[in-house]
Length: 296
Image (cartoon, rainbow, N blue to C red; front, side, top):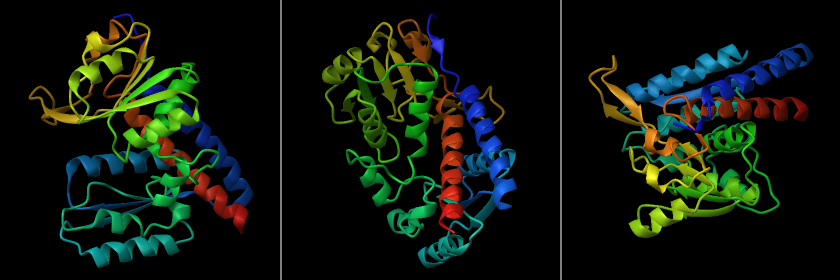
């Protein structure tokens, strides 16, 4: 393997250190701290684990945490009422509604109840729209896409003028990361499930930067990677693995060992994008806090 590993865990740790230092200063000045709230519905183990990691990181940075745990059969009205309470809580500056929600819940309706000034996941239409507007800036950047950009920048990987290919067009990662890459002056192509395989493969082969976010373990072959490219693997699909205590492991979208023979830089799974997502969530919540205290 010749590629340099992009250590998302180490980068995220550095960002959390920067956030904690800023929180310490703000606490002295305002006698308040940022507050992060997570709303979780049902008992999905992956969601519970992720929320637990978020709160642990928040506590390490000096944040206050609010956890709203609701049963899997909660009504739409009760879920929305709980979100409204968080909107009205002056000690809460960032709200996340952990996805996915149960099938009987209208996710879009629930998310749109979140106050825009507390939209720490940057999922509201106004933040999404501003992200895609040239010359405009959203209140918050979507966490995983922002984490991808930070990984590239902090590893000194040039973005401007480079050809980037994004695999996947989801609202959570694919579409917003493509928009952020364009804001940083990359030439961006998005390929997805409807892209014919020969076209998809040839497009990836041309890329200086590859962002894989399709949720298909091992989909991107090492032979597709251009020599010297940077590869960010956003995939985190649970696959059965009897050797693991949990009975599963997280698998990325990229055939890591093969791709590392061609790439100059590559992110691992786990230890790549995952920790960065949480760091960016904290950064958004901190921004929400700063917006709040300066508006008083």
